[in-house]
Length: 228
Image (tube, rainbow, N blue to C red):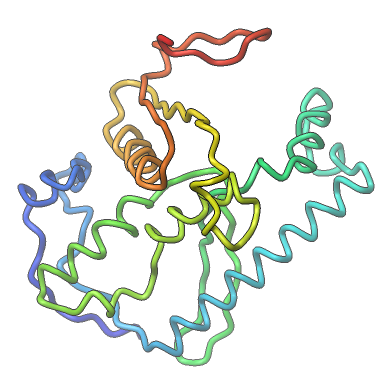
């Protein structure tokens, strides 16, 4: 059993002040519990190591698929193959963020992979902001927050320019790239999560803008546009 620790809950008003407006489900049940799951630092490190190992395995598998042209075998449509190859070979297409769903890892049980959501920022807001807010609300030290997702994303945005683990040369290499962040209208969770990514990119040093999908112009010849 994973131990639970009662906490001072974050009020709906406080959550909404942070931009977290999807805290209650349609049946009025709270999306955020007033309990913390307690795991040891050793268990947290085990998850960390497992995620890094699994990620390396995914990269290795992706390289194998590209090298051996196995797109059809894993259900990728033929008209996407060349785009995937181009993106795979282009170092600027740095993978920014993904989410592993894992089982096990507690009381010595082996960690098992459920799935890897490599293309979604789902749960970003909760992990990068709300966990930290829960620590502050309960008077705990910020150092007790094991994950450093916000800071990691900040550096990963910079790596789109430096193409290296070392991001110290970002400012001198950045040539004014513009980032347009977008979401559909009417989905607060998606919009605020995308705007959080925009905020991090702006803090990293990028020129950014946000627009809804229906406000954007798409041109095969000239690219993607919003206003200027």
